[in-house]
Length: 168
Image (cartoon, rainbow, N blue to C red; front, side, top):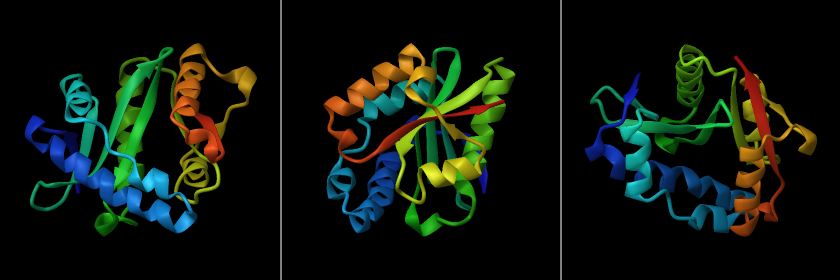
């Protein structure tokens, strides 16, 4: 599998990956998360135009996983990492994270950040295995605080969430 920037014509495929990967949340009693609509094409297009919508592609050059990221308070914030269930357990998510880390290092950013669910095995526990650690409230940057507030408004705080960081 290789990683590259998503093409504009592939953005609907990213939505399909997000929908499929979200289905596993149903088994954890998180149906509303599974039902949540993926990012709109216009939102994904902004990441794509900025060169921060990376895809892992199969042997036919078709995206099977993706990561979108943006700069938040001087760090590269991983906004979404999704792997299609048919391509799971191939270390694609980790490869995308390492690709993002390389991008951030090259841009002089000191860290990666993200926000995730604490009690979902493929969320916080997974990211800990990738070198991230949880931040307490006193360690949150203004941008991370703003994101947490927005998540609370959307009802995501219904399940425990954590901001995480990985120094580069």
